Length: 249
Ligand code: SAH
Image 1 (cartoon, helix red, strand yellow):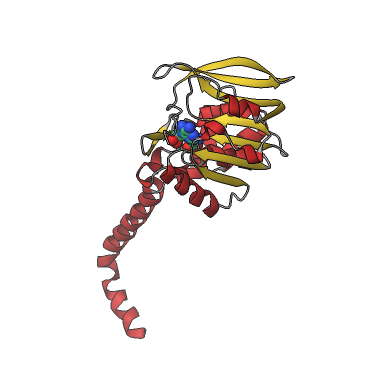
Image 2: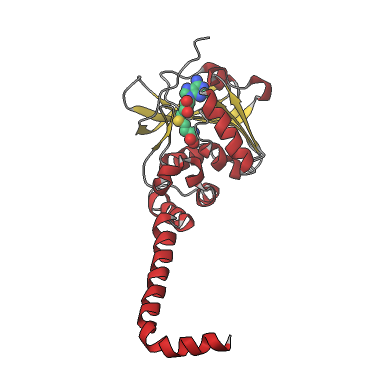
């Protein structure tokens, strides 16, 4: 030890600038990898809630809290995680997308979710919308027609301990009759008409939100309410969604 100090003492004035620059470079390197390569996701999420949701028309507290909590970057492919909190939809592979954060929040707010609600979702995709709902309601049942997406979402949700979400692989057109009735239904794929089996599985007073309209075009996001067994439709906004497909088997 003593020897080492002596040697260092002699060389100290000559080497110190090099040493100092080395340290600065190392620190800068560390800083840039932390700041740029691993973006601060929680700060991005906070900004997303403020700029994309609160400053528009998302005011439902439980929805805002859930959007501020669910780590959206873990629901998109790793190579595009840096864009997870951007103000648009993203591709999740297999020709499908994860909806824009604003649309997820809007649809969540539109069904007026409550703590004791049982909700059905058609179109699990990445599982993100299901996770947002699961933060608010008692239980979520979600169906995905692309088998690999259903299995990946199920694994992801389990890993993240969303134990109140059940995922089913298959055509959601017929709903989930064994678990009906539901307080609310969220359809995250655009359909040309209202799937009546889904409407039948709504509780009296229940709400179903879905993109409705002609294939390939702009659809209307509608809120359907079951009032004395009858359909009440309210148009909410123009949207673009991937299509509601049907299982041919
Ligand atoms: N809610 C998703 C986004 C879904 S995109 C998320 O948060 O990531 C719409 C999804 O609906 C796609 O994954 C598509 O495969 C699925 N889909 C389309 N038609 C369907 C049907 N008949 N039954 C179940 N899922 C369907």
